[in-house]
Image (cartoon, rainbow, N blue to C red; front, side, top):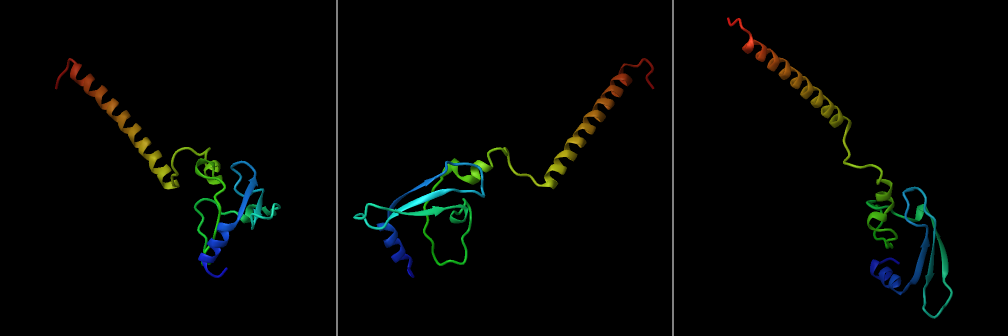
Amino acid sequence: HEKPEDACESAGRLRGRIECEGPNEFLYSFVGTMHVRTQEIIPQSEKLPLDETSIALRGVKIKNVQWALGVAVYTGKETKIMMNNKGKKGRKMSHLEHEVGKFTGIIMCIQVILCAIVAAASAAFDTSETML
């Protein structure tokens, strides 16, 4: 179809279902079958194979097309991207942020040690019997 309105109208007349593997974290694999009937009179459906080239993952940008129609197979926390990312807790940090955090911790430890040394020296000086 040349116009998106015509494609939407044709898609609205489609009846069918998608049989596919359950949600998983494997981004580069997908196995499924789409059963499509174009008219409600015909009891048999056409089987269309679905694989990883037939899907668009969450967050993907489709370019160089005037329009596209799609069906959401996995939603929410069951998307392949979310399931692939479930082992990685916390937020992403750059190498520089890791280094700055490490150096901040080192500087803080040095300051605590220096404060302890100065506090011990002050206590020793205040309690000494020979005051200058």
